[in-house]
Length: 438
Ligand code: HEM
Image (tube, rainbow, N blue to C red; front, top):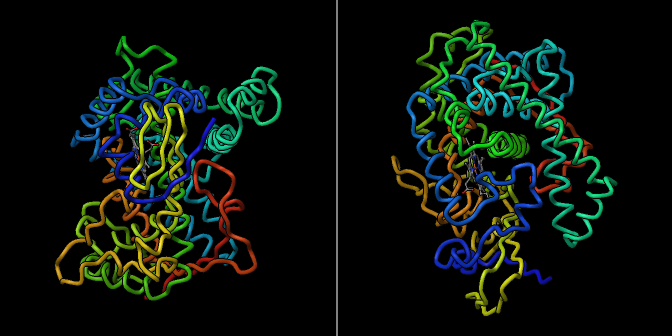
């Protein structure tokens, strides 16, 4: 088995765009993520094209987008900010990773299932969801473990049910159980047992209902697809937001610029007058905020939630860098390295500097950077389909958190990524928060 590791933008353009048909996810990738087998992340060719077209149509529904925005705003206002206010009162350190994982889980699951898993609630309602959180993390950790071994080795371990494979089998069971429970809870709601919060979510608006009665979707494929939607949304925004706060805590000037951009919106809100009241921003109000957009992109450049892409070579080829690849070779593309290359980003490539994304002209949008240089949302025909949704969710959360609170990273902790296909922090991110005086 031969591997080639690259972060050369010309190779990336060749692999993801100009010659993409020769670089597929491949059968091995699909086996590595067997819990999502047959669903959109793991398929190639025509099945991929059809699944993507379907998701594009789902994500263009104004009612679903409105539900996603409402759910996000609701979670920020009733979940995240009250929790932070409580932390501010006690001045106790807390794990930002844990808080943002709960937020990302709830905002992802609610539009998929039409049921709020309640991880941000203070009751015990979210305990089943917390098991699913741990299980999703296991899928990503053992996924990377599988990348490092010949397939026959991890398959033998899976067959013997030992080591990480044993843990993964248990995680699969938890995730399938979680999906079944959410489907059941949704069914009870539509049968007339809906809670007050959830009853306005009609079944046509949720993601699950577009698949559930489709004869093409067996129970297994339906479950794999719903888990895949959870991974696509939860793993990515949860991870991105943690690194964003890590960056903000070390860049007070950036925080000041975010607040400056938010100030005209905040001052229009009556609540801004009362120092004791939290200000929450509407997702729609976030759209024109260019500096905030730059803040997100700069964090995604340095800390892409999906740090590695994997492709299998279909037919022998020569990459623009001059490297020959043979059919069956595996190519690993490091998004993490690409975001830190001096040739691409300049001498200050290691610095967190959102200004690099601004064009310099007042009123202009972001500076255009082609996706083969900024690969966080992928490139070519497999581009992320949830990018706009993700930006809306992240901006809404960051705006309320940054406007209402001062955050600092607790000193003395070692912050580094863990062994996983997702760039999560190994030991979370301990922070302290203070209510901002206004
Ligand atoms: C910071 C947030 C996000 C980042 C950085 C991100 C990044 C990515 C990347 C790198 C891929 C390609 C994965 C691969 O093929 O290996 C991808 C695919 C995808 N993403 Fe996102 N994503 C984010 C948020 C979201 C959200 C919130 C959703 C859904 C609401 C979403 C939906 C999808 C879908 C459906 C695909 C599948 C495309 C395909 O396989 O052809 N993403 N995303």
